[in-house]
Length: 187
Image 1 (cartoon, rainbow, N blue to C red):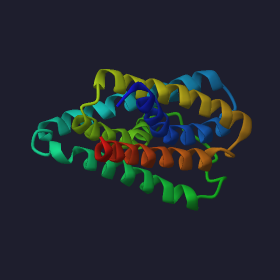
Image 2: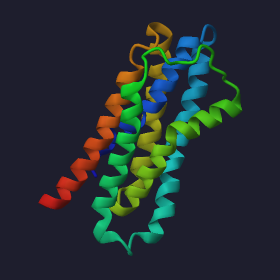
Image 3: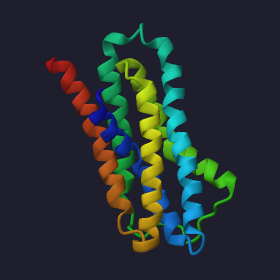
Image 4: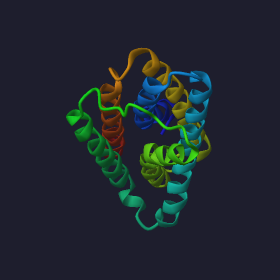
């Protein structure tokens, strides 16, 4: 997986964080910059760590099921994409909570929730032999930047982009899964 594919994947994986930070930006009346940096740091760190954990968990099994690795990557990414696409299509646009808590415990739980899909992607990285030293920081940095953007957009525009971001991210995950499978079947 090259830099372009990894960047597109990182954008897709960041859409949950984007949706949450839009809500957070909507409810932030004071200290926008400080709160933006705090939440973006949480999301960036977890988006960096989770694919590493997934990779390390899966690396033990690579040799056993290497022949099936493109199919596994396709199945994981497609499952994650569909799992997030269906609720995004059903959600009302204004489904953000009115108040967002920036308590460390709440941010920790949100960071886990928004980065759990990167754990599964980390599993597929092990099977695809992706350069984890490039992929994990790229995903984390992308989540950090997207989170800052989400806070600012949420503060300015409200929840207008939330559902669209989730649909786009889901579609990107499914598309990357299909790309991996087609690349395996054709080449």
